Length: 207
Image 1 (spheres, rainbow, N blue to C red):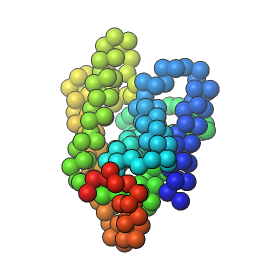
Image 2 (cartoon, rainbow, N blue to C red; image 1 turned 120 degrees about the vertical axis):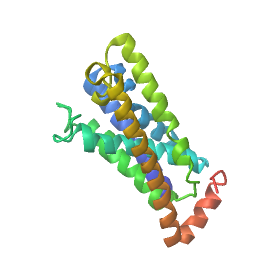
Image 3 (tube, rainbow, N blue to C red; image 1 turned 45 degrees about the vertical axis):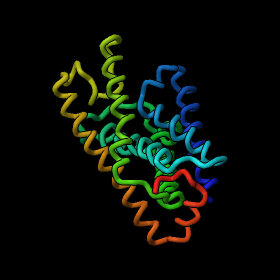
């Protein structure tokens, strides 16, 4: 079952990216965190179907996918959000796959099937990629005068505004990472037999 869900997660992410490329005919979609995180979860999930992948790596990929889903649904697609974005492709297949199906599959796989132990401080380590992405988006914006998300738009918010929103996101993402770790630990206590299987399956997992 674990292999099946990992394969489904990878397939959903890849299908979503392909559908997006066919919809937009624009290779610049890879500047978006949504697409980059989907590539990461696709690669990690696919690799994990054929060989052991360290638990902290799987956990990080899961967090990035969950960030994509949570930010989209709570901020970008929420009309009451100050960062709401009109999107003509909101009901398209690629939107459903990248922002809903893939994050849900990733979360279910991590919480109910993988459940490998990870130290709490990996929630901080996992922030490395979002912070690197922040730097990438800001530096790119200087040259092309365009920002991938409204909460990173220096032209609208200024650098102080972006710094404040980025700090809030950093805290939120850290807490989300902790939540994944804590919930995974709670499920392991409820289903110890599966936990033992996960440890044998993934000797590279962090104890």
